[in-house]
Length: 207
Image 1 (cartoon, rainbow, N blue to C red):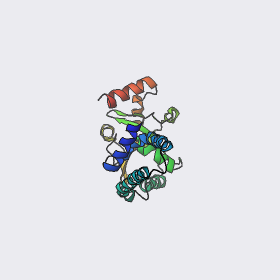
Image 2: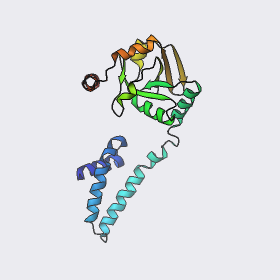
Image 3: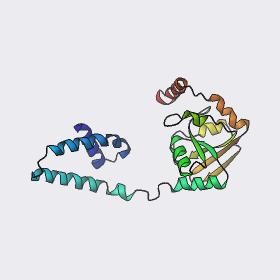
Image 4: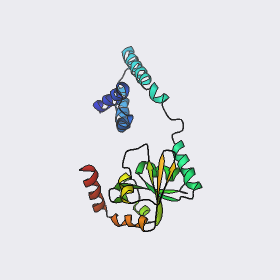
């Protein structure tokens, strides 16, 4: 626990590594500091001095991070939601990080289900998802690409399945599919836990 706390503090204070990794050590670090506080003499000036140095160093090192925080982090997603609603787009598929936030900010007036894109189509992304979400298989939908992200993009899918039309909204590209061109991708789906996990593991974890 002490090692985790030290690594977390050192990494966040003195390196440029993302806090995304260190957040998982937060509880451990806080626990260590709480335990140490029980055995610390509050009248010991050395401890007070060291704590002050740590707090000042941490605050100084993270000033730039606070200054660079986006004051409107969901502005682009809200723009996408407004665009989809104004164009009567009610159903779409996208990568996990874009699907959930879009559906949430749209109050489910627009449904975007998370999927994993493959060379032959896309399959349900079942981590942090509900299997029944995928019971509905519309004959018309959009596939959303976040042009700022290179993670699990639908590029190969779009090449294999030509969209009926392409729309653009800010940093998003929306590919429209309908009829057989839309439903044929469902042939690659399986909602069996074992098979789905095996396919994910073979493609994304084993290379």
